[in-house]
Length: 241
Ligand SMILES: Nc1ncnc2c1ncn2[C@@H]1O[C@H](COP(=O)(O)OP(=O)(O)OP(=O)(O)O)[C@@H](O)[C@H]1O
Ligand SMILES: [Mg+2]
Image (cartoon, rainbow, N blue to C red):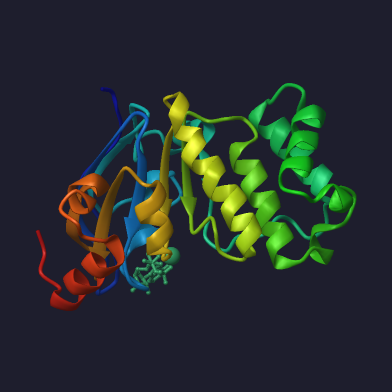
């Protein structure tokens, strides 16, 4: 099966801090890959490097066959992204923001596609409301819509479920599980380990910038283990692969 994302010894240091420290992971087409780890373990930095937003200080990575260091713009063009805690521009309405995304990404039929998302995530009533006046959850709905509206072959999404109520978490969880069924690939970071266990096919655990574990979820569940417990015991031990 085709490799969609491949990182080899990928590293990013900020002064003395090794935010990501020689991490190697590989993601195949059709995978739903979960990146897990405690606060400050390097998940967001990893996603930023893999989406051409932060330049690695060491190692290499290819995403959809493109080198993230040599062609960060090409990578950003092709993937869907939900950055961590990012909100849409305050001065645009929901619809204007999706039109803007449509123009930048050259998405045909943006009005119809936007309408689908307003209905699907149940925020049609906020279509013409300025983003500054949206609730946090509704802003997250809009960020979710902008990441998936062009149905990218690969989406990298940083804590996509945060700010969603339980009903919306369920809707989004089902959407993500279905998204990869057509050979598309997802790479997500999350602290919600129960959801990761339910929908992810593969996962990795980062700790202080280093890779503690990577492998299929079924490998754990097949031997009667659960991801939350596995995560806690591994992170508490803190031993690296
Ligand atoms: N721009 C930056 N300048 C300096 N240090 C940074 C910068 N960005 C991240 N770091 C540091 O890199 C480390 C990893 O941060 P990162 O945001 O990647 O963690 P995370 O796993 O996403 O955490 P969280 O679960 O809290 O979102 C932390 O020590 C953080 O303080
Ligand atoms: Mg983060």
